[in-house]
Length: 432
Image 1 (cartoon, rainbow, N blue to C red):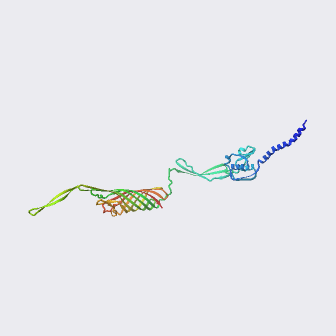
Image 2 (cartoon, rainbow, N blue to C red):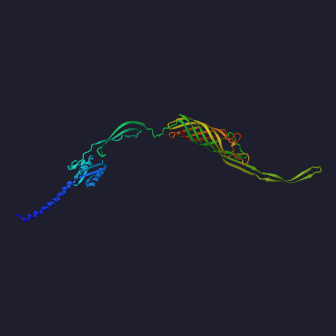
Image 3 (cartoon, rainbow, N blue to C red):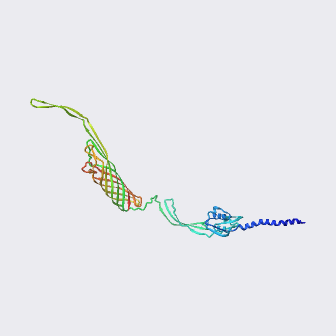
């Protein structure tokens, strides 16, 4: 038999149970309805991981993804109004080969192939591919054999881009345009295109090795000697002329200085004899009328005296030279030539300094201008080579043998010196 008191107690507690049930079930339903709300979202062009992080920062939506993978995918700017979270995720992942799956309150981002067999996952459709043609690239292949093989290839790279600069397919097409072989000729210097004909000038410096030839014996002082030794001869010059094929002709203007050592040694002797001196004189008168003079004498010994004269000086003769020359290239190559050269010049004395021997003590005196030949003729012949060093410039070393016609001093001065010398010349030729 039922207890009426218990039924009354149950009826009183029934509203309390209903309120408790509603309190438990209604928040879950409302949460389920509000978990996919309508949102407004915008983002500038960036990588996909940055866009998902902004989505969490704006609406606190938990999205699980691999930052290393999504940071390689770049999306364009995106903006929407009043769309659900799933629609926004679908738009962001469209064409990226990624989809999402909702697990509770969290969205998990995975590749479409990983979500293909999952019934609750959303797979994003791929975007329509577009083709980009990269600028052709030229390449050269060189073999390591005796022949150099130049292969000019046109490399066309075709990239198939799905969306947002994500490259999913690269196709290489190679077309050989030209193939030819060049015989290996060893190491070569890239010589410039060179001008080697026409008007030119050549500044130069010259260092000479001189020696003297005496046509007659040099005058020697009594008990002495005179000697001359070449010391130094040098010069500077400027040549100008015209070159046509192998032949060059021109004029030269220069300065030449000749120096030599002057050595003088002489010994004088005096004394080594007696000098008589008269101390007194008397005379005797004879009966016949004759007178005889008598002298009282004394003698004094003069000792031997030796005087040595030794003198050294460096003589200098300076000349201004004006000459003519001609050369012929007997070897002519692209960047090198060798030639023979001949020329003559007139030398004009401009200054002199030093000493020469004299007849009286101290038996030397400064060189007088009247003692030196004011002009002299010299001629030379030699060899030279030229290397190209720039577009219009070549380096030119030469060697000459030069002969002076006549003595360095006047004919009426008995100091005969005829000069011979080897000239070593360095110059730079510039072609206009």
